[in-house]
Image (cartoon, rainbow, N blue to C red; front, side, top):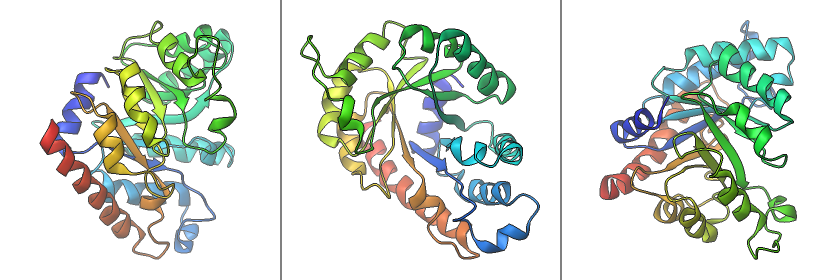
Length: 270
């Protein structure tokens, strides 16, 4: 999916919601465990209930690969079930030397046909460029939402910039905003405005709204650009709204609530 198609979906749905499919056998409703593929059955019902309100789905790959071959099968079935007009993110956080990255790119873009993949920038340009294929996206980790982000990402360099700022600036030499997004955590709302100034045209994938407590309105106020420029992720708060038999209905209600809040903002500024 290219940038124009993504922006068209944001306008059409009046939403920049990304639903994280962090599907855990220990958390899904117990009645699903009797089905032939509980992970896929859960995802299928979540997708049915939420696809009208979101523009992206983000399976966290760890939840699937932890289950071995069966998990990969569930992931593939999930990916094929997602409507084709919805952006897909492989939250895999890959990042290795160039020839290894090229194989990761082949796995997630050619074999599985994701639209994008999250990538760790630590090994630099040659580890990122193999993912920059036509109509595919790199979503580069910049300033993440976890508490450990302060261990390295905010270190001040000799340039007087923070490490995450250097990552954002340097990586824009490798790709255009048509292929490069950044992960910017909603738990750092005071920094989103300055990060937007560093990358005015790029999309941001913003985790941390919902269960992690990020402020949706602050993120949208300080992080938006003329094409919205945001994919705001919510995982647990939506997919685990309840673990009863009406889990999909409750997930849909939560997704609708977030979409309506987003829509109120987007209708004023887009």
